[in-house]
Length: 339
Image 1 (cartoon, helix red, strand yellow):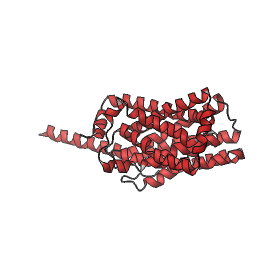
Image 2 (tube, one colour):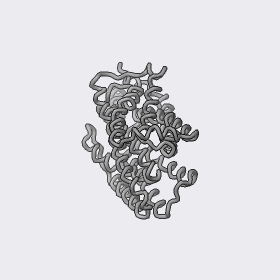
Image 3 (spheres, one colour):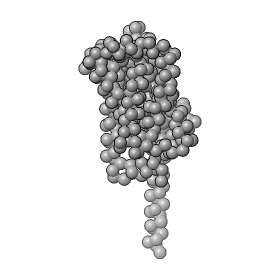
Image 4 (cartoon, one colour):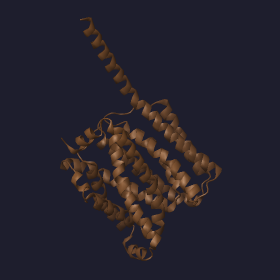
């Protein structure tokens, strides 16, 4: 039995609910923490590719320590090569998120991510098991566009430079999620690689595009001065971001093996409420205008509504199948009693 099959078997039954709750709570904590600590880390250590490289190297190192290394299973070379397609999108998602946070407020990044269903819906129409589209899904997608327009309408023009990084981050995030769903979903075309194996591949192979990006942006000469200027708090933020990077890398894959991409989408968009609260009311790094507050709220709520509508569409065929099985069993029981 493959490692993936063992993991799927182990997640079934009564214990699966508890594992799912722990996985969701862990990913939610890491997701919020990653945005907050990356925002602080990139201010203290403004060499983006090197910061991400520290996080990747630390995560790969942790995966090679006991007991993690004992659970690594990479299947065949074909599986590894297939998963390698995820790596550029995973690396691009992390790096573009760092750059977006460097030049723009977290609320802008989160608002743009509310548009991810528009892209994912188009691509998923070509999947082995394409999703049916409902009117409520179309309505919620339109609401996301309206919310983003309201947010940008009254936005400080100095944030426009970060807007393009937010757009690029959205592209990489959608690509990463779609490919992971295709290769981890039992109903799609999964690879025979364990969760720790996927995490190790993402962070070790991700060093290749990072080195290319650092060379293209001529970042290498800036590394030594940035290290010299790093103070005690900066070291703390960079270190914590590395630990959180381990969590977000592993838990993202962990949760994706237990729930559908739709449920993951609902979870991602629900996290935006925490980000808005943290930046505006706790960190107090940004004050939102009334129009921006309305736009961000509309965009986030419509994204959550989209996830719920999509979940309803996915669950309909399953409910019909269960009803048909129940009718078949009942008719079979009735025939037996007649005899």
